[in-house]
Image 1 (cartoon, one colour):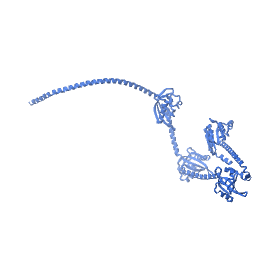
Image 2: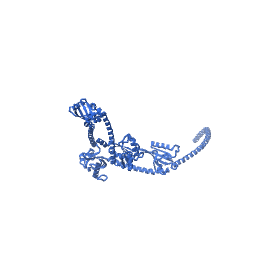
Image 3: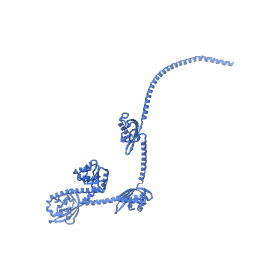
Image 4: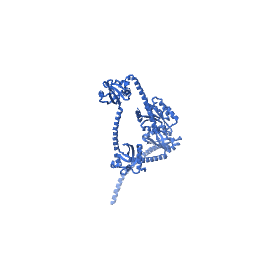
Length: 633
């Protein structure tokens, strides 16, 4: 019984502990201490949730902080102790309060112990173990008392029937802790069974007495086995016995023939070996798993891309193929002949002596069991390369050895250098943007979730706000008159324009803003959607267009006046055009009359020319003839 209790208490995996504290750092510290010891740990930060959590899944022990905001530890403990379902769970108070009155109050409300802050791991673990032990022993005592009460009641019922047999079996049979049966081999029935048999099989002594052995032993050749005992040919057997609940248990049976009242009976002592069988099976399985794990480990080591070496003091005792390849040695045997200092430059990048620093790290790994660090190694070819080293120490063959895992991180270092360069460039770019942002004469604002999250100095000046903080976390409509010039609500229109920007990526429009002094002024707004840390912000740039609006108004005024003048001139031109049309018609009429007169004149002249030309042609011809005649003379 003592061994069973110690075994249970030592098994931290079977114990559940609930920690209640509103401080996350206390929860992390206590849970880390307890989980490292193998305890199952649950955490709560609110005293109001303790009772429901405990009723849903009762822990073996509760660590309860006193000072909590919603419900203090005293009230939580009173609540637990007032409920019969939770009152048996031990409560250890944890608090920075160390006054005697605080501790007395903690015990008065039902606490079993008190741990002061700051916490010490050894104290916490010691108190937890003690109260888990006490709680477990109390449970065992209670259960044992119940069991004993049941056994006593059963014994009282059967005591009358056992009176005749009590004298015979009093010392040897009835009170022995081993299961004992007296069997009639001729009939196969149990004549007598001791209390241990009754407890073990789950039957009353009356039920066992007169029960066929085949009911608890389903072995098909049981009759032949009893006969071999009777003939003293065999007295030891391994069977499976069936309990009253139907469970089959492995047992070993020692059976001896005895003569009682001229009748040969079998006196059998039964030992349950189920746990031993299970342990043997588990041992076989674990042995097989160990060999399998060893083989897997060997394959894993050999196939690993990281260099793995076994170190004993300052010598290598084993390594994998990757180690030979990474360190550029010809063979494994060649590497095994090397000294620890042969695979490192004389000094590390920080100036440390490699040999001294390596021994210090090996000693740290031996003390802590595990150590990881970065190191500069040197290949057989003389080329240095950065590596991440993991040292693990463990016992092997009765002595401490260290396993070194070497991972070439040259690529990672180059990537880190590139990342650092890019980060510097990004920081420089961000600084340039910040300078541009702050020094811009135009107001620039950043909108996050439809509210201003940042702005430059120009925005504060233009809007006449006392400080930048007064402007931030306001909606665009709060810096505007209730309605825009078109009559629409500033809030509704702002929400619509912001939604359009989130959809399209950018937007430009005119807007009427209102300064802190109540003066409205028009601006041209440019919105641009920019991604930032997994979400979208809206970059907002304003330009005061008051002068442009005034110029546009003046231009509109000139345009209106010009239109009026054009209209007036157009009317005058229409009248003039009508007069011109009339004059043109009169001129055309006169022109037509003149043309008719000219035509008549032309016809008259043509007729006159014909009338004159005919006689003149005859005169001219006759004159030419006379001229010729005169020349001949």
